[in-house]
Image (cartoon, rainbow, N blue to C red):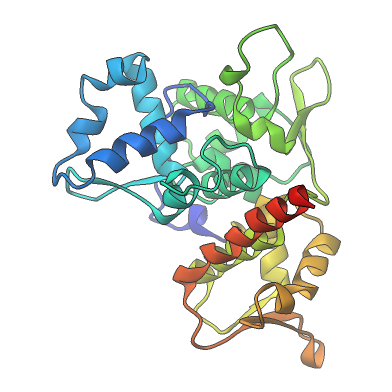
Length: 311
């Protein structure tokens, strides 16, 4: 029996919002900056996305909508329900704030964080489903469309086709054509999906991810844990294999997950502890741990990178 949020009876799939444009370099910072400078206004939504946004961002109306969509689903800004108020988020502040660690997305940690947000966002049905539920290593676009249509038969065929095309363009680098690199999605740098033939065939690249920092892995695990279980322990099986887990979303194999978990005591200063007592492989968290502090582990990845460059 399939598990996870996409298989709940009341789940409503979403296959739109991006206006067929994949995420582009610079978009998230532009949206963050505009929201940041207006968020003290009680009804700043119109100030961010109103008619003057076309001139401010230098793009068409559909692209403004796309930029807004990506900033929301990537967890950079938050639109308050039933209000006209838009605010920045702790993740957005970490990356793009006054002392932002990576405003131009030059560090792979930032890309892993954005990927994590997209692939665990229930509003991004294709993204969540492809990384957490799709059963094969290789696929053609039509494979995804057919399976999504089978699961959600009331969805428009055209909408599904456009969404799947946008999904592929988000992760799979396009053949070089001499065009502006800014039109390419920054997430292609992660190498999670690669073309394998001229027949519109692609593969998910599973295995060790050398640019994925341990702090980012811990952050992702804690976000997953916070929604998956209220227990003080989290099993290896859940971390490696459950829908929406780090193992699934980052396309890690079991050995890499196990290696990262074996170091978790030192990475977290014993706030989290790896245990194999009585044959049970699991992470144990301290009872007083505050999930809201999870982003602090991500900071260590940036600090570690800076230290290596300075050495």
